[in-house]
Length: 610
Ligand code: G6P
Image (cartoon, rainbow, N blue to C red; front, top):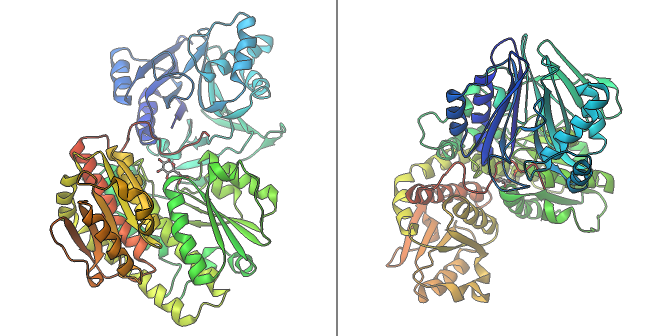
């Protein structure tokens, strides 16, 4: 998804902006560009379709040196990926703008501006904003005022950064619905859509709030809120080590992140459990008070985070006996719902900036839910700031578009939450101790699964020339199968569908033949015997099976049934451990197919537009 970087400094900003864009590459994009105000107070612009490397080459050939500039990676919404549609956009040759988000009333504004004589060179909604600001600039020759006035006309979601070559000492930025952070330097200041972009130059950040507009100079940051009041936004320090955004020895970020799981899964439970208890206080000082009266849990999320929510439903209903509903945010936000009394609204999001999830949260806050709990990986994100209670996952920055460590750490956080909630609903001390002991074993079990990497890589060859695949699971392993299918389709582009194994005979069995590999996760729980019959149904139709199974489950390898034995795992924690081989399988299939593993086509890491 689109990324923004900007800098006002004593030094030449080209390198800072390029490095910032490189660090935003993981979000997914199709073109990149930069505009810098040069020493003659002229705007120099470079834009290229494709990778940031292409922009870097263009800039090397034709430098755009200067002390203030803005840069962008674009993910097409209005208009195809092309140089003309790439940002920054200009109005005349003195005003340049970068924009994330979507302007909903752009057509109306475009018609209006066209009628006034403005000419459009792109199909984007951003160029409309450039001309609109320019139009207001003509009145007072004051960029700040012009942006502020233009904001009153914009409907939709945006983060903007604007420069004007007649005002070479400052840029004006604003946000409404899309994230924007100010990086605080010494004698220089920065802006970006994601703090990761700025880690080489600062670790101090101010998060702009909805409706904020800010004047950014090298020695001064002035912010006004939506109502025009001068406001201070507190400075927070970035918490993770700056090298966590590097690939290190790994070939891809995704592989690095898969391998980080023993560490980050452990980090997410550390300080929150003893040998035998979940420390409720560690989930937030108000956790006990808040959980006591919860009678229903409504989980909202998108993508991989939604699958984490689906696993949590099994835990919440089984351990706490509290009814739980799970829905994707984009559906939830557009329908009427019946809110049961004392419902806790639980949002799960790696980024904390997913537009649909945030919109659902904002609706829920108006609709009378008991409270909003967020499970999130990014401190300072909109979701974290707007929720009543937060359980942070400790995954560290996740760069690969296909989510891996964020998912397993979300599961850990959700299990801690489920146990805490269950304690208010009659969970026995013995059962709690049993689960907590099982949790302590998970990092080691994940390491054991990682040790099977070579075998899984071998297995992946069978998928290389296939066009379709089926993933089966039962109970809490059904969402694990869904997550496995999502991973495979995201990065290898093989069509993958997940089914609860019991539904096989109600449709998908018709598709099964030797060209349709069937992947199954089979921990040793009380559903394993039923699952074995489902496997027979596949085998009888000539389907080739790839089974990840607990030794004790007794699934035997035979022609057409490939079995990978996994460590024995407690039934409750099994979804965390069984996810990992499916991640590795997808990874290796994608590598064999030669796809762009970390930045799969058409996808974005953080979907900040609807
Ligand atoms: C995008 C990403 C997915 C992610 C989903 C939800 O689609 O590509 O990996 O699961 O957004 O993101 P969130 O940050 O809310 O978890």
